[in-house]
Picture 1 (tube, helix red, strand yellow):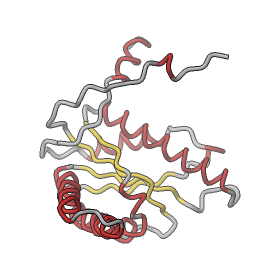
Picture 2 (cartoon, rainbow, N blue to C red):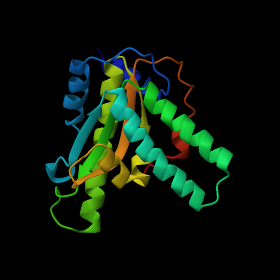
Picture 3 (spheres, rainbow, N blue to C red):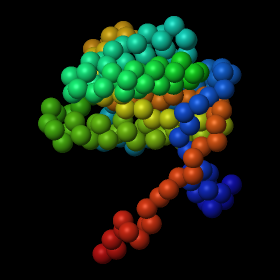
Picture 4 (cartoon, rainbow, N blue to C red):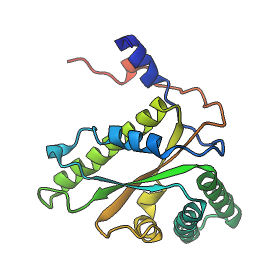
Length: 197
């Protein structure tokens, strides 16, 4: 593979939200996570932690916990009931259809000092690991989507999966074999967001 081939591969990753029911081999999931942990991290602290969900019962339990918080938050801000139900139903369907769900967490104890800058660096490190998950899944021929619901329902997600109290959910990835053609990605022109100095 040339560097041009690698650039092309990186540029072809797209978000996928619908999956075939085919299960994903555990060996593929392990390869994805082995690659993910090669992400850079501030001070090489590697603050990421993973909870992998592959069973329907646990996916349903997680979905119910997250959407209960979603429903409560939307009700608080006065969202119409039809909008709430549509969003909850769509969210539950996505989780139900995904063969693999990876909850990406930050271990809050893995930090040099309790300072905002250090916390931000740890969050950024976990985010870098998240990108590695999506690219490694792409290398396995899987589609995936990065979902931020757990940021709004960290305690609900942690309790639903019985995670250690120090694991702070940062994002969630749904993975599987794509059952849709991803949308064309519309990008800003590089020159409009680039400053050469």
